[in-house]
Length: 506
Image (cartoon, rainbow, N blue to C red):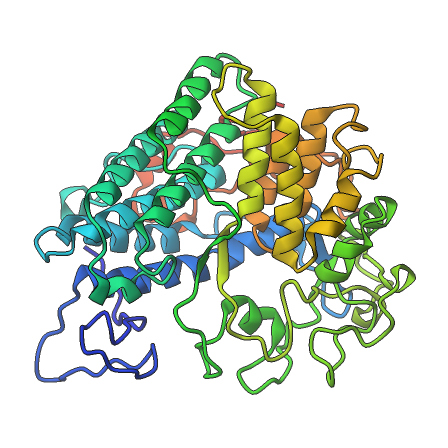
């Protein structure tokens, strides 16, 4: 198997020393060969997953219409003119490398006396494969992760992979239910600190996402209903009131800060990063919040024009009134310098706040999944109502960005279409719209997936192209074509504007 050269994320507790040294301090004997226990590997693997998600979440934030680029930089033609090739947006290699780590844990956990790690590793394996399907369609699955046993793995049909992920998550839940974490190794779990209860909730939440992705496909009603009812019957619940989020113990040391903070925020010393002025909220996003009188979240999603006040972290330099928030039309190449538009706000970036957990999946998303399932499939045995799940989704979305339940309740009783359930003419459109807001700043790739699945909200096209075509997927990367060419070619000609992922039935 392909191992990383250094597992830098091993906590002292993972090694069983009880030492309080930095989470990146790993003392090794240069005269002896290193060994990597599953507990040591999974800590690094979880951290790698979070850093690997930064790029896809950024791209998804653009292509879902939430973010755009300020004009203080040369406009990216790969993103805003869709001029990309199989050499761009290669998330494949990093994801499969990360999968090798989780497979290593699955294969070796029993022998190492760490069976409690099999369940979490299987959940994360399903999480990554779900993203690979949503990026590329057919992917190596059943024949993958076998090392020298399969150097050129065949590709599986994407729908079959999705069904396999439900089975994989069922297996993960069985493992989690049968194997409580050893307390001495709980800190190797930098997501849930050894809570099998929370891992089961995350596994069920991921199932809900996978099922919702297929909700618009004709003929899937019975399958989806059966699987949702199985979740209810087996119990365990789903993410409620808190996120699945990774935190290895971020600290103010170079390379040790939260990856979002490190990319668009500040250095470990508080100096602005070169890309600090790069992402900006879109005009559509800002104006939609204003039209909904949702200034509560507007002030959390973005800073007022002029950005964050250097002397008062988390507060805008200019007064935080609606007129001081400006979005940039998606994909424009001039006319909007960084100081004249809203930067990513305190829900995501605050100077000095380098230690926030990296959100993998939010509780708000789960509630919107439940709302859609209840609304679409009357035979599901979910106890709540679609309206109740919808309104709780809004409340959880407000909580995530740092606003109050009271403010969320104002929005859901406002009488505004797609905000107030009773006032919304299309309930599914209301769910999709509020889910889009809930995913903003945190899970951009999922926002793009939801946009491709629903085409909601109706975000403007970039002026850099003259057609209505938008990317529906990514190319298989050139690296895979070079190493597994016959199997890549067997997938046929990929047209990123026409070759849809199987759940995209629009």
